[in-house]
Image 1 (tube, rainbow, N blue to C red):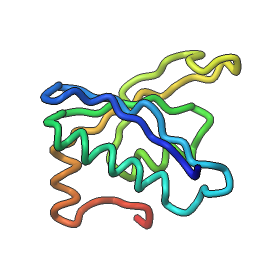
Image 2 (image 1 turned 60 degrees about the vertical axis):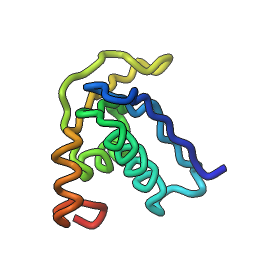
Image 3 (image 1 turned 120 degrees about the vertical axis):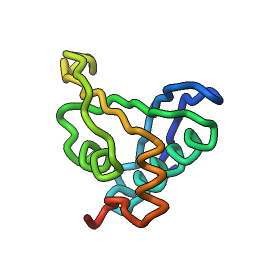
Image 4 (image 1 turned 135 degrees about the horizontal axis):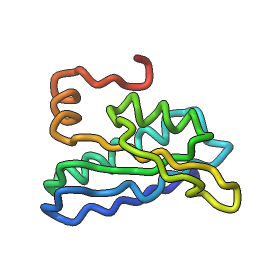
Length: 113
């Protein structure tokens, strides 16, 4: 397995959550995380979800950069969320209407921005 991803996005809900995105260490750096993230966001959008949230480790700048380049913004922090390491989680959110518009107009920030 090279990766997996999970989404909680009930049809018509105001908010959804990226539950997980994991890429095998041997497959990292090839854009697979972005492909999975875009698929999750597209599915949430198709279900009529307005905003998608996620938590990311404060000590994972690679994942943070991926989320920021797709349009996520930090909206909060959960102290010592990841155990047993006592690592904070950054809570991030994306507005799917804005995300869809950027993608449709070619304004997505993307990996090479």
